[in-house]
Image (cartoon, rainbow, N blue to C red; front, top):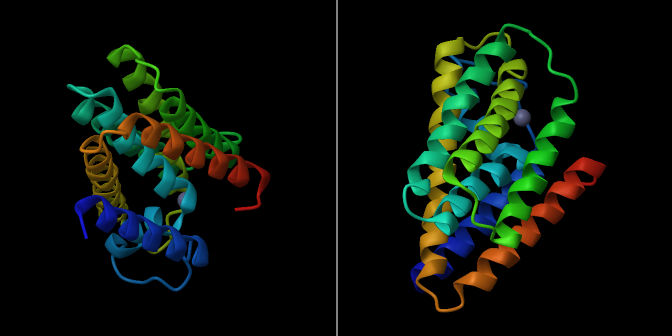
Length: 197
Ligand SMILES: [Zn+2]
């Protein structure tokens, strides 16, 4: 099995397990580190967006490979703080599905965005996801631990996306592969928006 095959299997396992257990928050105890860490893995919306950010950073190449994940994670923390304090954002659920569609579209069209523009958009997406994490925080969780958990999980998902992207780039036909993955992610985002996923 080559690296790409392994990554495909890993992604498939994660994707199937996450659809089976969407957002199981109830009953999680402890300081919140575990709950925070598990949250993105079991929310198909977060999982897809975070892997897509990793893929997109590889597709854009150069400094984007660390700037885009950093923009997403950094703004996610800011959004988390806002969400934990109960400041409402309207249409957050809808907004998250739209971030999945937009990230997929960016991959599918393979447009070369200026790095700063991409970082601003992806930072805004991170803010939306962070806000959802913050408002979904279980009441008994300690905010710092919960945040540390979801940031760790997000970083890992970005890395999975980056590894997957680098794996695809080893292949001669990487351009259509990135585009196809983008189409799949966008379609999943449409499914989330319509509430069928
Ligand atoms: Zn969530």
